[in-house]
Amino acid sequence: AAATSVVAARRLGAWRYGGEGRGPQWLGRAAARATSVIEKGGVTNSEVAVEDEGKDTRQAKELGPDQASSGAPEPPEDPADEFQVLLVSSGIGLATGVLVVLLNMGVHGIEDLCKQAGSSFGIGSQFGPLLWAPLLGGALVSAVYLAVGGPSGVEGTALPAIRNLALADSAAVRTAACGLPADERARRALGRMGLAATTLGTGNSLGPEGPSVEVGANVAAFLGDFASGSWGLQGGRDLRLSLLATGCAAGVAAGFNAPIAGLFFAVELIKPPNGEGEEITVARLLSATFAATAVQIGLGSSPALKGIDFVDTAYLELPLYMLLGALCGVVSAVFAYVRDSAGPAFEVLRIAGVPRWVHPMIGSLLVALLAGGGGFPELTYQGFANVNSVLLDADKYSPMLLLELIVGKIFLTAACIGSGLVGGVFAPSLFIGAVGGALYGQVALALTHAVGLTISPATDYAAVGGAATLAAICNVPLTAVVLLLELTAGTTYAICLPLIAAVSISVYMEAFLRGRIAGLGLKDRKQDALTRVSMLSPGAEAEADRIFGLLDKNKDGSVSSQEFKEWFGSLGERARELSRLSDEKKGSK
Image (cartoon, rainbow, N blue to C red; front, side, top):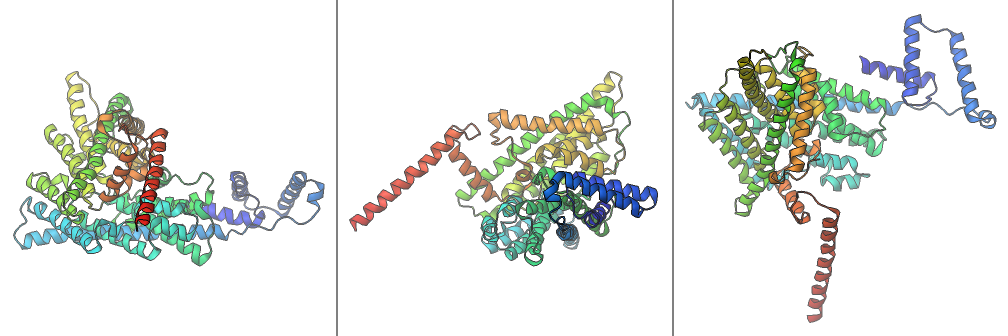
């Protein structure tokens, strides 16, 4: 309602005021006039005449007597572009919502098929499907990679590639930046959706929210190109970046059924242009709303996280929540180290002769052995079911089991990412943080009870731990705060201050460790959210690591200007050497 009222005000303002200005000052006048209309029940012709007279006088003073009398004012600004942006953004939201519904239906359908197959063939024991279902998913992903020539056959649709596409200045440069024409990019994006459904439906340890964001980004790129070619929509690079942010907002809104978090996520992930008009904000708001509406129609509207009812005095426990945030930052840094080590580990296998298309089967084998053979079903992908299980029974899990779940989830998620299985890190991050928060809550309860104090239940600490870990791992603190409130249906806002404190300290601690502890080998403390959320292939990560290693001569985890100059100079020396050898070869002939 708020968004459409702004659109209507802009339309009326462009007609009534002759398109004067597009900034906040103009919008303020339009809002004031709308308020006047509502309060008075309308405006009279005399009021309009007085306003017009004052407006003409102001223009004459600003332009001077010669300019003011030289001719008619400029024609009204055509608001068609704004409505085209609105239509494109609404289309992005609807299309993203529908595709995310199809993705989730595919995941649930594959889960049901695995359960039915286990029952039909007599392998449906307690942990039976966990032994063979992940392996089946890994084998299917490997088969696709073999058919298309490896993971590179479905690349080109991840968020960094789509951002490069948006930053390019011409169609030819955009195709070169992404390496793919629009139709091939669309086919690959749909293919990765299928691979994500296969990965998650068979229980491998990743999540669907990353694929949902990628779907939104690709829909935004495709519809943006279509509108530019068919409708002549103008706007250039800034508009493409704004539409990309809109697509990412729709992806989060659809993936989590959380439209407000989607708006914050778009700002933190893409960092849209500073000068974008309010019509873009309105369009993004509607896009997220349409995406979440489509998901609610297709998948239901009940809150994702259940059993949470924060106590009204949670703010009194602020120091405990701040300490929880610091511990979540440490866990997030450990996760980053293990994840960054997975790519090089699988690259060692490739160098040893194991083809890259086989790697998904290795990752899924690890899931089957640890989750199925080890008796830890919580480590598989189960939607929000495993997170809710921890939240509802946070005080019933043994501390040792919670510690084992943290270690196992970190290891398996990193292995799945490094092996080339397709999925995101949002759901694993929430689970890791929730388990860590539950463990912390149990310890805090025991210590405070020993001295006669009463604090919040372990469930509250588990929920805040999930948000704090998500914020640090993906570098999206604002999104994490709003997301927890949306996922819990805003049960109480007493948790806001502890939540914000825990998230802030977690993000800071993770960044501190990435930048200060050389032993962790974490290359970039300022790695942006887009890079962390992206589902990059292990081949791409390994190539990036190789290039970084060439630049980082002293192996301190950063590249100085001097190191870059030396590397650049070595390229020139190498080129001259190759040229000399070529000349000698020609001379000998």
